[in-house]
Length: 425
Length: 89
Image (cartoon, rainbow over all chains, first blue to last red; front, side, top):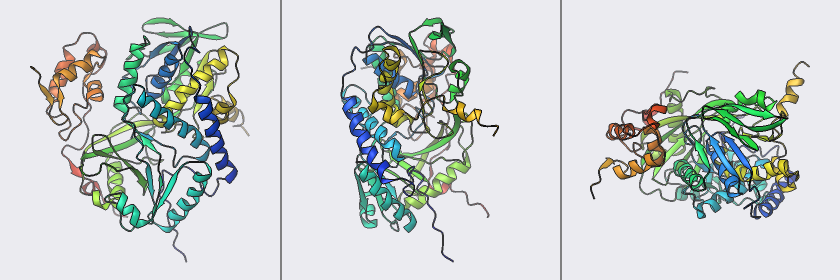
């Protein structure tokens, strides 16, 4: 009887056995078309439009930033602290390598936008040290060999490291590794300074930000969203966009569709600052991932379906033990590194692991951007920028550009209503 | 200058904490997210009272939410491998 080797590459969302070469090649052309589209200057294209953004996580803030840069008058509402849920408690990954093939074009475009933002005033500590996915057995290695081919067709630069090269490039890695595939252009950033910097630019541009101020309802007149109601009273607007992550479900009635976004805990822990790891890339494998922050700490995470649903953000011994065990196996050289802090955040999940991005069916002028399944920090730049196209497609009766529709066309927020209708079968 | 070190682990001064509060941080957790105060090896055991006192002297903001800086495990730094709990199968 042969031994079944496990696949513990939990950051490999792409199934290299089910992905076709046509799909991979389409990711390359989608990226080229999207990049050409994003080169156009949006300045002034939304001049005179008043937009309310509901939600002050990184999705809402980035959406507000691009709308403001396009000339819109933006007013943002956050029920609690700005950038403090998943937005401030994530590992800071901004990458395309490892993503499902139909997310690669969008993820690459978002990395490019993050890089552009970092040269235009947003202090994100953005850098591209790459992402090394490490195999610990021959089965995982064979999956990485197949993945290498698909990502090459998708135009995403990768490099296969032999076990010896992995040891040389990844200090402390298990010397018995079976090689590593590295996405050489993958990026990362620091959520706290990114969020702080976006807030500062918004305020400088006269956008209005209300934190600790929940939105109570969306105001509708004549089939069109006209603003929101909060404890500050009525705020009139031409458009309202809901970027409330897992709190989106409370707006299902206003939106006229089932905004099913489920909260799940995700836990991380952080080592002391460790000297000598300046070129450490993002690493993953053996059910965990790790990133070196700009300050020099190593963050270790690795949630999954075993985590509990809900908004509980206390740390559990089970998770810390899980992370300690798997990270020590992957990087025996770091097994003695002191952990100074453990924390948890809330990831937002949808049933099909695709975001909700598009118009709400109940009324014109109501839009949705949420449900990013743990990829929100990386994708927020692209989604914020594409919201300008989305809202213009409603107000100017300009159809959504083909290059945009190619990457967000399956994200319609009303898609779960169809499934509901079939549930009696 | 007459500046005080608030967070010795992360080298955060009173001026930086004040700037974070002036920029809109209305509780100690929000100060931490803006300045890194409380994020070093001692995890706020030294700076927490000072940060909370500084936030407390501002006007309306602090009344709007809890001013506590989040307390995280572990109580003292513990090595990665020592976190592992071996369970009987």
